[in-house]
Amino acid sequence: MTRHGWTLAWDFDEGSLFAHAATMQHRYLAHVDVHRWFPGIEMEPELAFRTLTEGARRIDVAEYPCLVPSDDAHRLILLLHAARSGGGAGASDVTQLWTRSTSEQQEAVRRLAEDLDARVALAAAIDELDSVRHHRSYRLWRALQRPQHTHREVLVGHLRSARPRELLPLVIRFALLNKRRMQRQSEESLKLRETLHAYRVWVKRRMGVDS
Amino acid sequence: MTDRPVYGRPEHVAAARSADGSLYLMALPDGPPRALNGPAELIWEVAVSGSSDVIATVAAFFDVEPAAIASDVKATLKSLEGGRLIERRQAAGDK
Image (tube, rainbow over all chains, first blue to last red; front, side, top):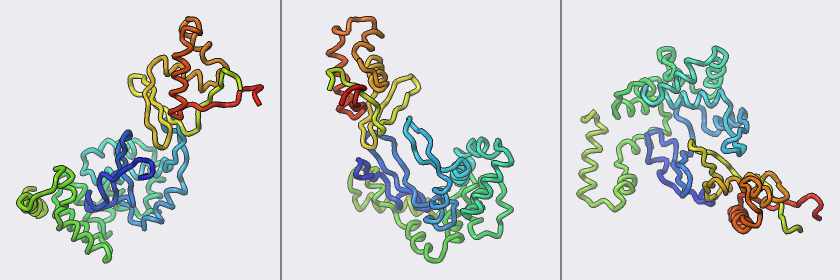
């Protein structure tokens, strides 16, 4: 992408705690989120992408043939995205892609979610979370499902669902002020005083003081 | 080669219309994108249709003499070709 004029707008660790996507920007085109995995798919990313690619097909976008996931995979990915938007922006996706789907379409999405180990997030999207209470990621998706969730609730959910090797990077991402992101937003270097103030606000927010 | 080149649409060209009907073209993957106004859009459409005489076809559409628009059409074709939005093709009978 960089060879074709794309530059990094936000790196993987500058977004959500999932650290799943980097945002690329282009002089002429809209921003693109490049995913290294999709939150909600708990299978190893490489295997998950391979599974998604197996069902991919080409459709014309702007009269140009583009490789896209199958309809079932499209539905599932949008539903998984809706599951972490706390009933807000994703609600219409759920209505359109699940509630109005046929039972055959729903069954196909469930099967794919099973294949990709995405049952918990799908359950959160379609309001069936109680059916996966025993799963380690249940608490995370329950927190994300609630519109008014706090950072602390989300962190606890992440900690509960994380594999051992994911714990340390997760805690570091949660605890550290993302100074790089702040500098980009302010378009100049942060002074010590500004950094300390920002850190105070950051910690308060992270601890749920303002939630 | 004839002095009336024949053009076609390169495989790498994406095309999309905005809500107001404007045509946007872009040579992938780098662009830049270009919005075509009415006459330029018509010239592009005629060119990529493989017309053997783009100037005459466009002139007929606007009901004017070919000579009156020839230089403008040629300039537009040159610009479109430079932007990789059309490409020359071998006309039937050319070797």
